[in-house]
Image (cartoon, rainbow, N blue to C red; front, side, top):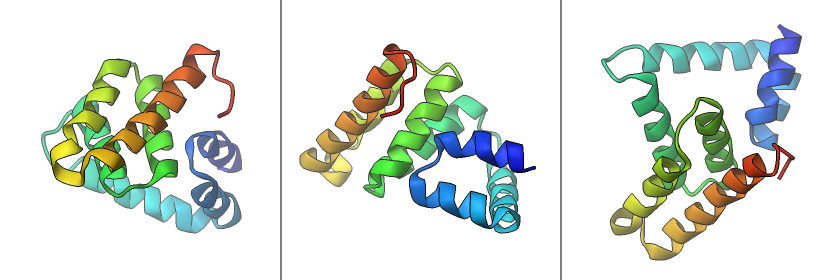
Length: 119
């Protein structure tokens, strides 16, 4: 289980990574809750990933936006889909926050284009 946590923490914001490494039993329970929520309805994994990214954008969390953008790209989503999430947020959360989210997403797209180096 520790190896799984260490691999997973590469995709997590630092605070969540710390929690996962320090309290793996709490993190495992949290992950199980997330899986239960994801599997309760008809949304496919692609839609769920975009929704999770949108929630990170709307919550104004740079770390979560980075994490979900990394996961989305790792799962094969098109970078343009990720950009569209930030652009669609403009009417809801405002231009400044949406532009900030777009830059966070671009951080990860550029990171992946540069060979996956840490941002």
